Image (cartoon, rainbow, N blue to C red; front, side, top):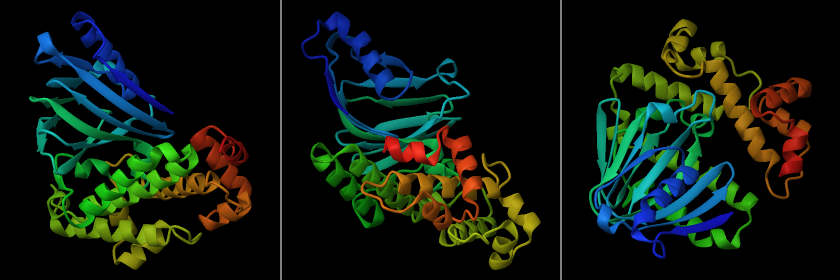
Length: 314
């Protein structure tokens, strides 16, 4: 679904309230502060491709605040990949902050209070991704907050070029085709941020980080194997099972839960693949489920619908 919103034809006194409504319906509830109230303008184009949302907005200087009262515990929270085009933006959360200039991009999380601001007229692209989907590819996406990623070269440039090719052609694609391309885009995004040396540096010791990356890589490479288990992962990575579980301490998902999440998200993508001819049983076995009944129970528990219903919804 495509929509366009702009303040141009509205009286100046009505523009700010209108813009608050546009932002809330496009992303999520936020408080807004306008730096130039006497001359505010804003326009926003939005493409809704469940479970993703792409938007391009241009506006006067604005501060967006995600407050505690805006955050609801049972929501499937989102991450925003923000790509400024015209001027610098800043993102602050948990007493940490990052500035992002045109020619770069940043990652933001919505399940904690934050402040996002630009002090000059700006235009920016925003890709909204469900947290559960991103975490199925990046175990701890929060490791990549507060880093500015270069989109002028390397994998960052590949990610951005692919993103722009999707936005240029989205009007000629149906939702199923676009959703498949956006899932591939998330893979490129993940490769880009994982390969950035500044993002790899973290509060963890270098040795711990090496183990985390090795474990995550092994899991992704063997995710289709029904034999994948904490014991097999620990053995392959040369660590103890106890230390493997310790690497996942503090994360939202345990190692077993993360494996299941990757498998279920991958199965969902296959089920909704346009023109897909695989049977549901084939898809279940492809992603490491030996028992189709168990797969169906896990799928319905996770997504609220059966695999058959997911295929019918397409």
